[in-house]
Image (cartoon, rainbow, N blue to C red; front, side, top):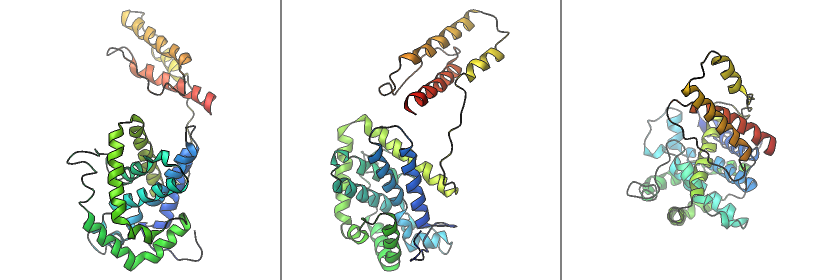
Length: 306
């Protein structure tokens, strides 16, 4: 943390906003860097930008007064909408600056992820969709921007100088109307492309932000360690649990299904086979079969990809 500026804005009753944004951003980035995925470097930077943006609008006095229980909550204290537009702006600028516009879709995805990080992901299109609602909160956002400029501009600028010195807060405020229009255009473009990858990327970044946010709110700054579970634990359980089972037709069916599913493990192409399913009638042992397969697949991924 900076030693030359005394931060006062809070994200939670016992946590500074600067500290929370910094922690969430770094946890998010590290989650991705610890994975073996395509575009890891780009995605990790996007996760970082989402992290430092997600609670930006907690810098209003409206939110701070509610947090300190000086005032009751009103729409002026609602922080995710302005924060989501700020996140879009930061990601868009990063992509433009680094000639990465082939990843243009990450900007509207970042907007949606931040917008819904205190709720559920909803439809983008339609009368109740997020795109159609973009202009509903404009007056509230204008009050929030005016409030930040009047009361906390110095601290929020210092906050982002520490977190990412390329972010221009005043430029963001000055261009807000145009940025809002770009969010709408990119949001509509995202829905028109009908690319299934976008769906999974939304869930991917959404889950990372939620995980990081809750970890830091719980004062857990280190990623939870992966628990080691023996890949043959289900086989061991079956030998003990079903030792007295008679070889009747249903048990034979269960064992045959189990062996057939497990045998497919050798034929899986890890980079390509991403969605797997088991189709069996009720009572044929799908739960234990799926668990055993998943644990063995986990071990295979660990051995092959690290």
